[in-house]
Length: 226
Ligand SMILES: NC(=O)c1ccc[n+]([C@@H]2O[C@H](COP(=O)([O-])OP(=O)(O)OC[C@H]3O[C@@H](n4cnc5c(N)ncnc54)[C@H](OP(=O)(O)O)[C@@H]3O)[C@@H](O)[C@H]2O)c1
Image 1 (cartoon, rainbow, N blue to C red):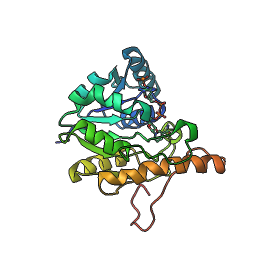
Image 2 (cartoon, rainbow, N blue to C red):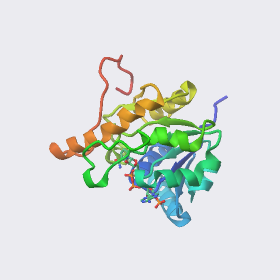
Image 3 (cartoon, helix red, strand yellow):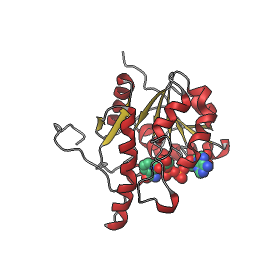
Image 4 (cartoon, rainbow, N blue to C red):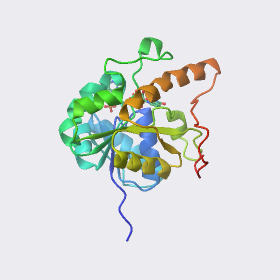
């Protein structure tokens, strides 16, 4: 018997990165709920994705309802909105897996690494949410430019950090489902380095006039997604 695919709430799913992930997972049959601060915006983005994919399964809800309705939560908001968004979904997130995509960025100098007070957005999320939530870091180095082009293979590995091995394995399966290689990159504290790579990639984008520079880890056996 086939196991049902887990439902995913994309908090901040009206934005560039969240909508790109939502598109990719919905395309592969995952039940996706777009979360927004505004129910109308969530519904509009869900309708847009359904129209693009020729499906009707994507739903839109305000963030707390989306987090409550899904089995797995994906958090993809600007760092400036990170703590307030976590407060809005904290009750609904208890006991669940939360994938944090957020990158601390200093808007005044987004091409230089910015280390926040709690060292990493993901580490801060874990502290704010409490131990019953399994926070896993992923996708910080994957540009939305690639995610939105469905016919396009994404030339980027996804480093996965977290303190729970089962949660990381679930996230790696979600990454592989959308055609990328997920690599176990250790403890949640290692998200400090993964998040910090993003401003480096943004610098490289500007310096070499490209969009969506990414990363590859060498020295690993090649998988189907490499
Ligand atoms: N874009 C990329 O290529 C990329 C790549 C890797 C990682 N990331 C990271 O992923 C996260 C999301 O990036 P993004 O490019 O998708 O961001 P975005 O488009 O600017 O925003 C994502 C969503 O966050 C929500 N949000 C909640 N509070 C907000 C506030 N105070 N101000 C503005 N928006 C707010 C908005 O949804 P509602 O208004 O509907 O609530 C918005 O649509 C960021 O932390 C970013 O650093 C982005």
